[in-house]
Image (cartoon, rainbow, N blue to C red):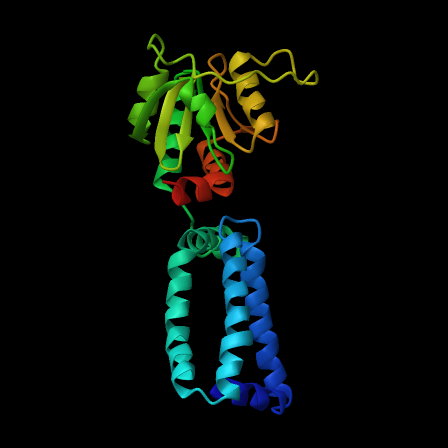
Length: 265
């Protein structure tokens, strides 16, 4: 009955009430928009359906027949419901906070960073200086498991030293690519399909074409270090972008991959 009384109070409350309703709608709309398309979307639909049935059938029936005990149970469950939401949507909330940290407004105040990305950038910088060729693929939403199965599984922590040792000339795995899943080096010595884009420059070598070919098939991000020039490039969506220095590479990888390496396992 308290719930119905509050609704009636809002309706008769004038301008402040409409402001409250607008703010509630804005919050619900923002949360729903964020969850649509995520793995939590089906769960959200199920919860909304459950709430609709509960309020429509049980709660209003309890109010109609003055079933005090059922009303009491519903009021107590309401508090637990919000705690359950925090647990169920923990991954989505984590990604949302990461996106918030990457927003240009907040980036000026707090610099979003990732230890995993820092290790990749430091390794790429050192390999660039020593002209050591490298190809690193970072998984985002589309799984790279087929490529991992074709390489040598490592499932190791991402460190600069590990990446340098993998791509050091003469080692068994230096000719293939490294795949990063979440905060782990999932595999090394992986083979990627070469890009067949006829518009690519003929000066691009096999490593660059492999890095581009992978991003043409899925939403992964690749980091390519040229063995001839030491130039570092980032491949995404079938396009290659040259990074002039380590800070530019760090910024680009943070914008593209921080959700994947920090939100992944």
